[in-house]
Image (cartoon, rainbow, N blue to C red; front, side, top):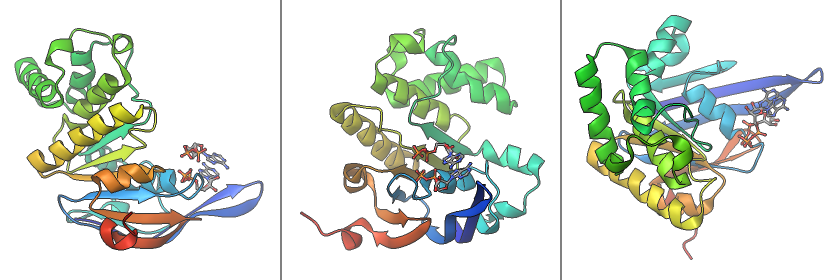
Length: 233
Ligand code: ADP
Ligand code: ADP
């Protein structure tokens, strides 16, 4: 369960305070696929940065499971961040590393596993995303969809409590988008993993999400089950 309570964040812009988030409340159930949709400037990036703990809100609280993350010290946050998987629009892969080495990277950062254990975990992750046959390639040799599969495998490496997807399909063509959405649905089912995604693409919400929050000018203007919030065509 993820609970966001009265989250507020302002930025200073040219001497005045701009509200990026105003009293945002969200309840995201364990194992849910939760979409956050809104126009550019609505506050989506700010919200995801509060969820992945890269940004401190001005007020309000973020709880993931039992933990009130807003009360954590920087050091605690760094450790906690390893349990949050991030998937990015532009993949953010390391170009000089192979596919396998990109997926291995967060395991190396976290520490605690032997080289053999890390290799076994990488094999498992590559099988999960269907990239076993590409492990020695570099990112530049992959299609967009394959790059995002690497991004997803990497995000899952440390057994996260939640997968945060930031416009994860916005750089992909429609067909590849469908394949990546199907993979995310699979992962959600297989692992029971909670997925939170931000998007400006209604199709992503309709195809993948159980619940949705509509963000506008930093406020949640609608939230609930996708079937209740949007009129079906
Ligand atoms: P997107 O709509 O794709 O999320 P944005 O243009 O809103 O992209 O933001 C891209 C980055 O620029 C974000 O990291 C955000 O924090 C930063 N940013 C957005 N607006 C401003 C601004 N007015 N001043 C400084 N940084 C900004
Ligand atoms: P979205 O991701 O939905 O496009 P953002 O969270 O990036 O929205 O931005 C929400 C609002 O906050 C916008 O008005 C944006 O210009 C402003 N903003 C975002 N990041 C910054 C920043 N680092 N400095 C100043 N203003 C920002």
